[in-house]
Length: 236
Image (cartoon, rainbow, N blue to C red; front, side):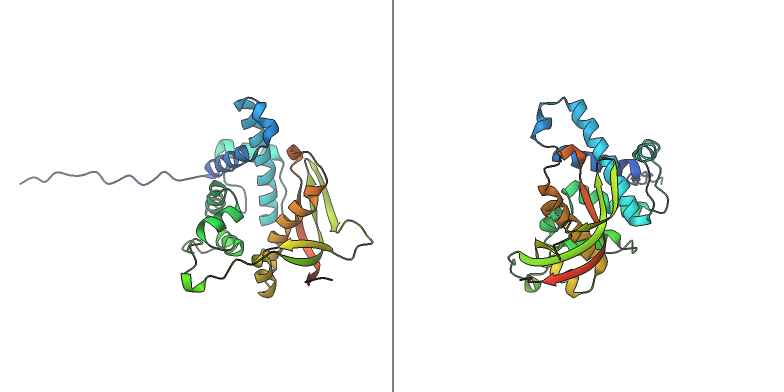
């Protein structure tokens, strides 16, 4: 008796850096402001790709300490080459975050905290469980934003301009900057999780401080905390 031979199911295609870059471009496309609604799809896609290249430069620098030109990012994406000193595990997790709309968005969708999303993203364990919904018994009521005082040193990027060792607050007469933060920031501070705390504060300062300067959105201003000099809970 002859038995039919069934073909082995094909493995899903391997994702590469080009796919991660495309996911980020799609995210940036969705984040373009109203001014871009009047532009052609080609122009909007080109602007989203430009912003994605700038963001990739920032991510790689934060991960490896090395800063590359946006044109290098474009070349790696075109050739589907993984940037040096990074791996596709990390890029695949970044891509999942980008498809969700960002760290805060993925945290909201899964019921996790931003800190748990960041920890999962940066974990070296390929079997690390993704941030999932918190068991009902472990959930905490949503907390109101809390005032904190922060003095930080960081890197300010505005378009192609990079300013190292920029202090926040920028007014030398102010001892600290007052920010409104959620419980994930306090959790990171209480746990002495400096890496997560700096990343969360980077986004908070970008939104609440740099975002008030009236800069054009296409300049993509961003502040990356490199050192926390003061962290004051409930400042006067």
